[in-house]
Image 1 (tube, rainbow over the protein chains, first blue to last red):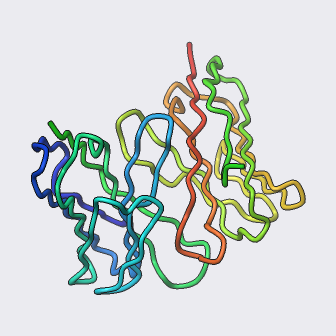
Image 2: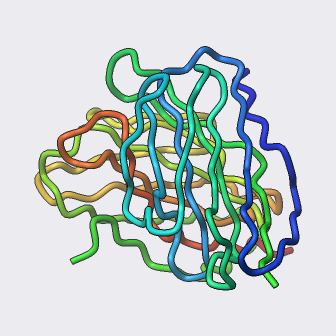
Length: 114
Length: 111
């Protein structure tokens, strides 16, 4: 079974703080993703990585950055947290081999910015 | 037009009923299709992939209609444990890896 592990289930931070969300997968997947999910808006892609040190902006990258120094780990960074970044953050991974590869998600991190 | 559209529901059905959801997608070049299930305050989990010829997994049947650009999910003999939100998922055009998630259809199965 694919295991995607996110470092925190719940996190509370203050406006202006730099926030790090960590994600690790154990299936040697090439692709890793960060999403946020808000009521009525569904999942929105923040950033995507298809290989170590490679990254690509998703639909809503503003205010975020990412780091992929090792294949199994993909970090999301909120450079200066703001209240509108309060959300559920979901990390996912998928194989880069062939088509029709589904994504597998971690448990999610509920982040509150006060 | 949204890339993936679903009726948000909720669909309220009694145990044992058959229920079907549809989903439409905007880009005819999409090649990969999935149904995910998401329980309240949990992460999405893959329910099944959707193949061109249609496919079945136990009580669940998925169909793809490329001409009309819609995907369906049929659940037979509904169980209380089927209560969840069902997400329709399609690959983004031009990429096999990136997926677009619908906002989901909520199902509530009752006694």
